[in-house]
Amino acid sequence: MKLVKTNNELQEKLAILRKNGAIGFVPTMGALHSGHLSLVEAAMKENNGVVVSIFVNPTQFNDANDLKRYPRNLEADLKMLEPTGCDLVFAPEPDEIYPKPDTRKFDFGEMEQVMEGAHRPGHFNGVAQVVSKLFELVNPDRAYFGQKDFQQVAIINKLVSMLDMDIEIVPCPIVREESGLAMSSRNELLNSEERQNAALIYKTLSAAKKQTHEKSVYELKKWVTETINKNPFLDVEYFEVVDEENLKPVENWSGNTKKVGCIAVFCGQIRLIDNIELTNYANRSL
Ligand SMILES: Nc1ncnc2c1ncn2[C@@H]1O[C@H](COP(=O)(O)OP(=O)(O)OP(=O)(O)O)[C@@H](O)[C@H]1O
Ligand SMILES: CC(C)(CO)[C@@H](O)C(=O)[O-]
Ligand code: BAL
Image (cartoon, rainbow, N blue to C red; front, side, top):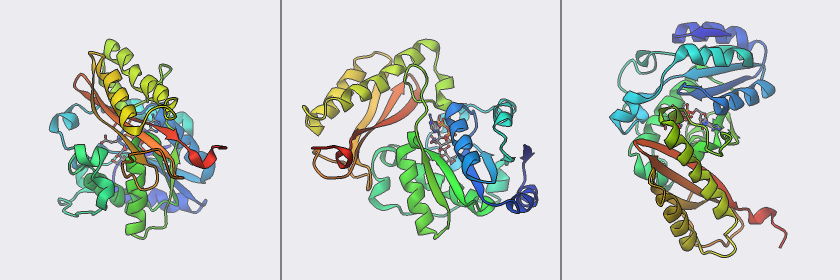
């Protein structure tokens, strides 16, 4: 495993790696955990060379405090990555990615006007700026993204089609702590009491999944929000039920496409997201 910090070094090593065959790419913001490692493992299975990037991208943060306190620990990240056998770790400084300010504006239409897009203005524009830049630099055959960031996967799919990039986007399942809490770098910022209470988020989503036959979408949204808000550590920012394919909020359970419940919850100062597939009529034997 080789650490590279500049684009020149990256291109030099990539030229050698590419001779072996397909390149898999895992973009991250570091503070790695088993969720990230599952993406790297998937990439290792399906490609001949694997590149992981570690870059806390300033342009996707809509909250300056969130950026300031975002956990960073390159040394620990490299220790975690070593046993995966990945080939290259690209950990650039901001100037390497943004030699001049990136003023590009991406238009994802309605897809970015809900959930994370609505509550984190400019977030997906920043994600698109950095991911398109990283895709240009790494030029991978496949890129791996976690379904914890459910809306992000849809945005990235749209990005590659908008930019006509020949990159397969591979969505990977959510990895959870034993308590059910979705693994997230931001979990490191929770104290132990907060972390214990945050487990209620997934517990409630799992219980909600069992109630779609007896509650309307409206009733379920109300129940999830009230159940979580009863916990003094937690404050729901949104719980939305959307169509898996177009991310449009749905008002009833009908239709053939999957419905996904997506949530953002403040646990103290820390904002956590999670989601669960609520219905899958396509696979249900009626
Ligand atoms: N629990 C998880 N399971 C699967 N994939 C995950 C998980 N957590 C993060 N990922 C994925 O890892 C990639 C890098 O994410 P990122 O570095 O932002 O980590 P993170 O844990 O999501 O951090 P945070 O949510 O605190 O920003 C993204 O594609 C993200 O969806
Ligand atoms: C894709 C990504 C690495 C871009 O900074 C980030 O949004 C993330 O970690 O999910
Ligand atoms: N994993 C999403 C990155 C962010 O919260 O900015």
